[in-house]
Amino acid sequence: MTNLIDGDMIQYSVGWSIGDGEVEDAYRRVDEFLKWITEQTGHTESRIFIQGEGNFRKEILPEYKANRRDKAKPTHHEAIREYLIGAWRAEVVDGEEVDDKLGYTQGDGTIICSGDKDLDCIPGKHFNWSKKYVDKGIYELSEVESNRFFYTQCLTGDSTDNINGLKKSVGKVATKKIKEPLLTMESNIDMYNYVSSIYGDYNFHPQAKCLWIRRKENEIWEPPKMVEDVRQDMGMQDKGIKQENTGLGMG
Image (cartoon, rainbow, N blue to C red; front, side, top):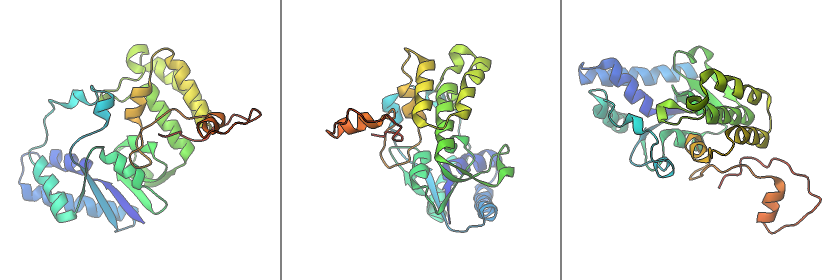
């Protein structure tokens, strides 16, 4: 079993905890943090990912993460980054987010290790070290559960990434009530149709494309297709075909 570790979160978490202290203390804290993760998962084999240049989401939604532009970074932010790359062989991720790399690298023999709840969009085993989740230990999400989390985020948005969802327009209480029907839905197409109907004329697709965490390399989220649509795309015709959910319909 391999730990897939969110190096970005370690970079920030350790950086803020050390503050203006000695950089050597930051390096020691990184070592301790990574050792602690392996103790929690029970597996020593790890891959660490850290952010590089570029993010395809900003081409889809220019205001994506625009609220972070002027935010300060920890004093030893860059030093910790270089230490993770040099001492721990962290892999630099360009053109997309670390979350995406974690998402499509996830498999039967891996555990995503992060403090970011957004990664619940990805099926499989997880270890979330944030205070709210750490006591859960390793937990596993089905594809249905991860799809449900994704469509719920489409409604609630993600303020840290400057994605409003419906919360800003209808309010927190109303949004909470609106998302409740998703909790009992099993079908991906039903979840999509429900969220689409709530948005009405307002096109939520650009937000969805930014909220979606890749499960396959280079994929961009697209609305799920019915079986009939897929067959027509392939040049197949069957007038009596039953319409069913074919999955996520990624392009």
